[in-house]
Image 1 (cartoon, helix red, strand yellow):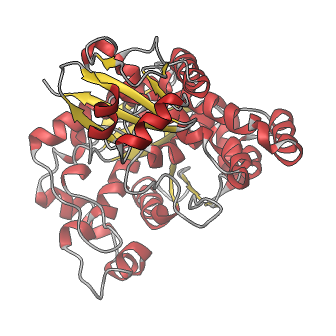
Image 2 (cartoon, one colour):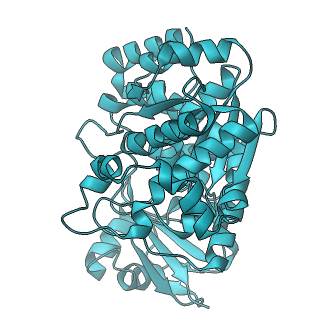
Length: 416
């Protein structure tokens, strides 16, 4: 399959300006495609993977990947559906640019990859140059009809946000001129901005200039919820913000109704293997082979093979209950979301410990659960109600991990 056919099979193509023309340009030599990302945070999140997966496929098909880290546009903000983006300080922008550049470099590698900052050219434009060289080429009538602008006319939109499509058009033209970029890739809400850039290139370089646009469908799960939105907690690509284990678990926990769709979109597996996994979902869903393969592939792409091995090692330990040999960092990672309570560093009787942490509601129930072998401390079953708990004995003296029954965990955190 060619680049376009592959995108269609994977459900990764929403609109394209000229499919045949793009394929012809790709066949006639190495051309570039670009995705822009504004540094609104110091890390990318799952939403950024959506256009980046298409850009990576373009690179794998023989093209050059170009990524704009929008130092200039990030200081302004593109139109949001309802309100304006909060402006960032120069210091915040610089920090964010550094973090995102490092992540993009890891995703795309050094070969056939160019990372640029649009402050290189937009930051040099004077107001009079902007109006003279570009402003005259954009029709207000056309700009007002763009969906992202039209949706804000009743509630109000600032001139700053209104001009974002002009700046994005300038970006496309600059990369067309500097890096032989012929294609811009963006989300479905970027169609108007992308076509504005193509129109600008035709105005400046002639109607025969080769420039193409491609947008990606809105990514939702089987319930209609926007992909990557999880109870207000973003899934970051920065391992310090979202650990590789948590990242792995996000993919491992996907529903059967979504997993094949995500295998097609977020992995580079071929048709035959994905079809085999799709059959496994139908015939043997309990094994969750498709989810595991999805988790392995996406985690490897973002964090590397060692992160996959670590995540699976930790998952196995938690499933078996063999947690005694885990490190303090692994405990913090794996059990950060379970009920927790503060404890002193002094030794304490097991029954008093369970009551203090609200693991048990009464001493009678605590004694009964201990006697019946329902309580495990740091991976070791406790059956003697006279046992003293030494908080400094495990996990670098930071945690005491309690399991009641087979699945209910509690984490005691030693206060210093």
